[in-house]
Image 1 (cartoon, one colour):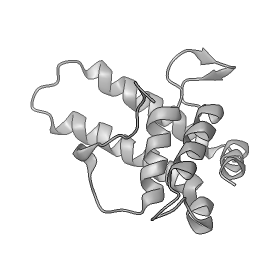
Image 2: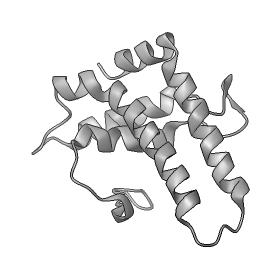
Image 3: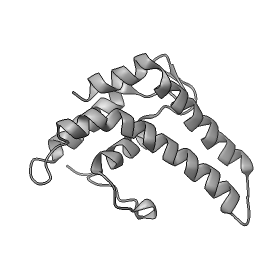
Length: 136
């Protein structure tokens, strides 16, 4: 297929971690809704359809080693999404305080508000339980 993304590498945050955390971080980055209203969902909520498409594509892509996420990884994936979101919040705060020159502090505020809203969304039991069902 031409003009299609086949892989994404972010060496800026490279680290040794469990792979379901990487999947959770990707879902946090690419499936959380930013600004506006999409299908009745607002900034800081998760686009469940997009997350489902991403997850199914990930599972389908790994037919060889290491294989798709296993049962244990799937069980903890919703928890890893929470952890990934907290990881990003920590990055936003550290980036703000570690920069020598802040060009526009509103950018950091916007990120912090967005990921704080996403954390609030994740803390709602019905949303968190919905994640668990999405990955089964």
